[in-house]
Length: 127
Image 1 (cartoon, rainbow, N blue to C red):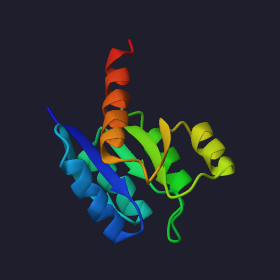
Image 2 (image 1 turned 90 degrees about the horizontal axis):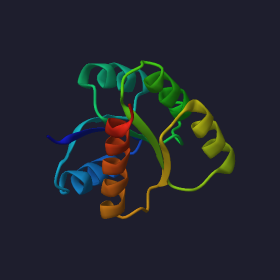
Image 3 (image 1 turned 30 degrees about the vertical axis):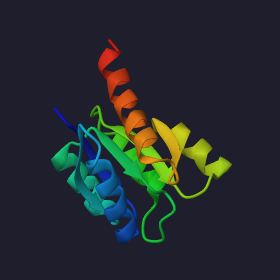
């Protein structure tokens, strides 16, 4: 069974490249993407992905708010911030919101795929 991934990023080209990178990895399936916060919440609720990767540095949406709203649903969805540069204050806010990871976009595909698999495996091992 594939791990289902949803992407939230305001840069369509970045989402498309990331989706192709992730889809090239065995066992990963990108089921949706958007740059709109309300569409993200609606689509995530409907698609129920295993993992959501969110760029919090968006002009038209509050990425930390999206993280909070997704995590508040009570679903088992893992949420990670995927950002271009490290921002210690934002990282702190993201962790306080309950995200499962704070990753830089320059992570290579294999390491990102490994992080995704580990996040899912950890949740399956938890009682």
